[in-house]
Image (tube, rainbow over all chains, first blue to last red; front, side, top):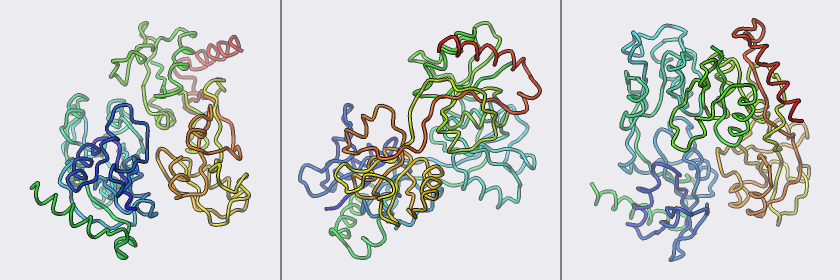
Length: 214
Length: 214
């Protein structure tokens, strides 16, 4: 049976809506009292796993799910061995450098050498500053990255920005965009090659659904 | 001014209660509509940062907070450069190996060589199996680790257990305990040596409060 790994959080609603258009109903995950992490769709043609966004590529890479939906930001940071199938065109955000409004810096290149940059995206941030040839220390945080500059721990942050509200509320401004991100459909490479569980048929349906929406 | 890093989640209530007994009131963090991450206590003698448990040692290591409260499990996994000051005797849990009730395994040593172990505690898990001289593959997950054995992705998990309810609900049983964990008081090593902001005075008060409770 086809198994799809779905990401908890911001992308879940749109992901479930997309799968409904191809005939797979996992809306039970959206019920407020849902505690299940593994369900079958009512027609019993597929099942879904509800996992943290960053775990979606893990389940797909190991083949416990043939398909998964996850943000491009996670794929860039984790570099999992999965096949990138399609851009789903929702969940837009960008990974950006931000500094305090009151700081003298207005671009990443103006940051002081050996300054500090707080981020959940350690790899992406390190790569970006290496490419700029600017030696900085990346401070790994797992949440509320905006506290880095506020407490004076770091000169800047590298974090996801969607509406920009969190930055504004915390007196921060965006200076540089590392890359833009949207939700992506990914597949287990072996399942994709072997077309197991009629994977290609499902992918065609999803692709048509995306095209119909645009 | 003294700054204390407090962990979001399971340890927060007891941490705030402990600090209240030494005259620092950060109970504003417990109000259901609280959105602040940084507050001063009403007497303005200290401030507190509210951060993810695993970020507490980061703020303390970098000196943005002189003190912090965090589980021993986080200290074991992250190995931050902080001074371990006191065992606060609350927040008891243990890091354990668990397998499916229906599996043939009843101890870590019975697991098949080159089997898979899912965990959020990659370092602790790897060290444990290395010490057993059992080659396993650690599958890094960030949440709902119990899905590892349920979906067949891994033979076992290494995860925190407190009441054991999550394991039971998911048909898993605990086979080995890696170590036990409680909340710990940590300090920035330099602040501790320099006794900045009368750190030693505060630590004496906290130590007396712990002894009074036992």
